[in-house]
Image 1 (cartoon, rainbow, N blue to C red):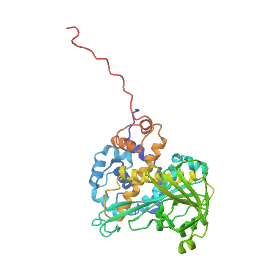
Image 2 (image 1 turned 120 degrees about the vertical axis):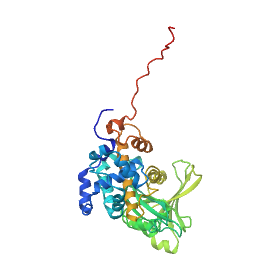
Image 3 (image 1 turned 90 degrees about the vertical axis):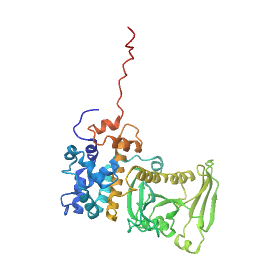
Image 4 (image 1 turned 180 degrees about the vertical axis):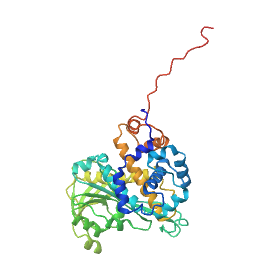
Length: 391
């Protein structure tokens, strides 16, 4: 590895365009009442928490203080104290970190683009919508209402199938219904939305159809339908059980969605179950519908990575603002890691990349040499010599 005078953490921060960062800070005026801890120092501290897997405010502050020789290279004059970090987590608006995520997504997006097979074949943008519940203790987070004795927040995300990252996300309390968040979201004409049956609201689906948006979801088990046309599939694929055009027959559902729909019944061999897929596109092949719904697994993988690899299960602050800051910083961390993973010549797994980065966070090695070739080739050891052979 080539010698270098700054840490790996500094070079990771170098992926962030400071002009974009400063523009976001200026637009939100988040440094107006900074009291010595500006937004950049705050951001570096919270990103250090995510990349270093710190468990508390004390760990963050002591970890940064232990690397005093490197702080100037991070653009930080001094590490924040525990009380200062607690104060700014509570009082600096999380909106600036939310805006930063989407600004960086636009900045790094060309390097994340990979145009997957189905999106390329359909020549359309494909979006995957889902949400994930993150449990919280109601006694500590009394604002996070979910159930009578349980608290939670919910991350609602619309993932861009091309990049594998959310192009839209919102954090709410656990009681917010998925469909209500979906109704506040708009999609470009001609795009494809993939969602599970929690999002089946016929009035909303009809609004999507009227806007020129195609959707693939699952039919609810209690839906009243009549079959208009049944097609015998010629694809000769055992997982496609049926392909039918239908109309809704329920009194209210007919008023909400009066047009024709299509259902494709597929067999999920892995889980040994039948899935009845619902779509408003009447001409795609049944296999295309099946593969589009299968792509929904990508958003589940994203939530899995976010929960397992980053700090989103334990929180260093109990206020709603502090929790939102930590969540958005975890999203920024996974965005940067995905950017590095896609740029690297070495075939990284995301879990390995974050683990190796944590080990070398303050090592002074070249980021790109390391990320392309993380393992040094060792010289062969000298042959064994028998020191007693001449005795």
